[in-house]
Amino acid sequence: MWFITLLVLIFILGLLVLIHEFGHFICAKKSGVFIYEFSIGMGPLIFKKIGKDNIQYSIRALPIGGYVQMAGEVGEDDDKVAKNQFMCNKSGWQRFLILVAGVTMNFILAFVLLFVSALIWGSSGLEPIVAEAVPDYPVAKAGIEAEDRILAINGTEVNTWDKAQILLNLKSKNDTYTFKVQKKDGTIKEYDVKPVKEKDADGNETRVFGVQIDTTVKRGVVNSLKYAVLKFGAVINSMGLVIINLFTGNLGLSALSGPVGIYGVVGQSLSLGIQQLIYLIAFLSINLGFINILPFPAFDGGRILFLIIEKIKGSPVDPKVENIFHTVGFILLMILMLYITLQDVLKLF
Image (tube, rainbow, N blue to C red; front, top):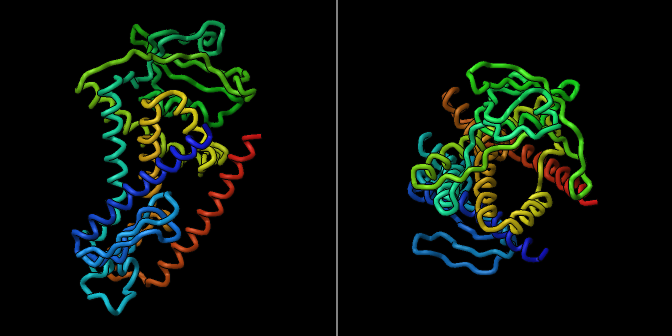
């Protein structure tokens, strides 16, 4: 079973990175940028073919994504390439489209998967309406009842269960959470809720509030489309909330997962069936797109940031400065990834 899980993990990561890089590839090609290589996989070369367009199409040994090698991604770097084929010499609008194309492809893939999944299996509601307040648990004891709509948690507006779950995982003073709810009669009340600690089947300590959500399944094309739009927005919103609270310290790095942590999630998804696996691919695709568009070094968003700076100052940024910026950022990302992976490994014991 572990081998199958590993193969599925490699397939998922490979698919997401490949889709991302294909977005850059097709947009760069349409913009007339000279492309040295489009590779499926990373590492040692297994197979290559030079196309009629003079691009090297490669298959490499490690099936963990791919890449597009373009001329002049930062500055002119090859005297054998025509000036107008360097990416850095294209218009600002063309460069922007090339940079966002990868993220766009990830978002399109996620949206399609969410829509298709809902169309096949149906979808449950996302509205933060309490289906049941479990008796003798904190939420019920505080006074929250079935059909109450959660409007905010600790002063932050809530519009989906996804966002509510993120907020309930953040640190809170005295481990107490203030729920602002709208009752069935329309009145608005606030309740302080302190979760109880219990142990799950694996012996891990969890915090339990005792609230159940509506799992009624809705079907049809319109409902599927509505679900895909709302779920996509909910995941984006949740990702933004996670990033903000990582910087403020309300959420620890232990909440993040690397390849080892994702491996565990893939295993769980496989045990739950193809529907859950499709959702996981959509979720990870949104995550990859969201992270890549952040204005951080080595990400697409970091390169877009330099494009914006160039437009503001009216001249290109020194390529050496930009290269140092992205190199340092990449090193920091690798250090962070190693730390997260170590945390994931320690959780296994």
